[in-house]
Length: 424
Image (cartoon, rainbow, N blue to C red; front, side, top):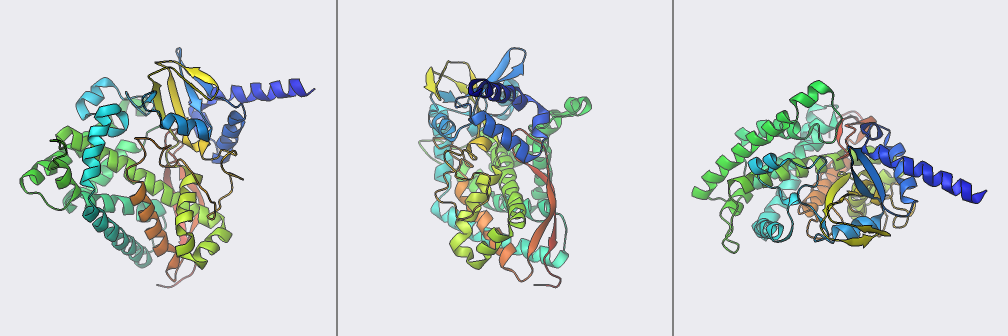
């Protein structure tokens, strides 16, 4: 009976492949999705996911496969786009190519300009600012006693930090926050017909408005440079290169949408995880400096803010027991790789002492490893220090309201409350 049972299990798991392209799959409770990923990983090789009309992609679900593909950009290319669906040619022509959608010399050239702009002086100032902003946010929370965490806390920190680092004038910031929400609110989310007719127009208009703002600031900084990141980018001289208006706009959009959204979601999931695991919270509070770095990485692994990125096969290559051919589409499922039993013992457990913790929350390595990984970790550590070590603690109330996106583990809202009455 063992052979039929095994075949039935494989057939059942294979049937789930098509569900990865079904919006209903992403509206399921998180654990149901993770259980499906586990069954698909057990097949032992990449699986094909039909997307309709003869299209489809190969899903890389195991940690080793995602990591290998990430480190072979000449084989698994980011161009023409890493999102699903891929950006249209006219969108790329209008807004410029984001760094995440570039390969080879084009990507290396742009990344070099950006990396050179992040000088030790700028990074030191940014880290000092992170601690100040985190303290101010928690001061405001204790004084005003809001009850919704995303708007009051987790979205504020990365937005304020990035705007301060970029040198965005205060008068632009409320509109930028609004544009970021419009640009990202429906990424990877199923929408009704009326919404589809309005979108992506609404999101693209938000991006266009945001890019016009930063282009105007860039022109002013070329004339009167300061100590901020925009000045460094537009006045850079790396092999004769600086960022033009479209490149600056594309980078700013990436930084705002990716940097703000991913960090805010990791922070929000982090509070929920600490609330659901009081033993881990007590351990962290017992010696914050000892456990904080591990706690931040475990929050990122457990929540995996970016669920997946897409790649296009550019050269024949064997991976995971399958021969990939040029033109095929591959999707790197970080959400599955970060629960791979072969790498993470008891992968569904939230364990701030997990070591080693080679999670792929910032990508699988290679040239597209997240530039903002260090700052994101500093932001999370600074904020949780303030949230947890003040006399009045905070806890999540109920479950996070998830967007049901197939792209990012987005939290729309999370209610929270104070552990005890009184002011800090």
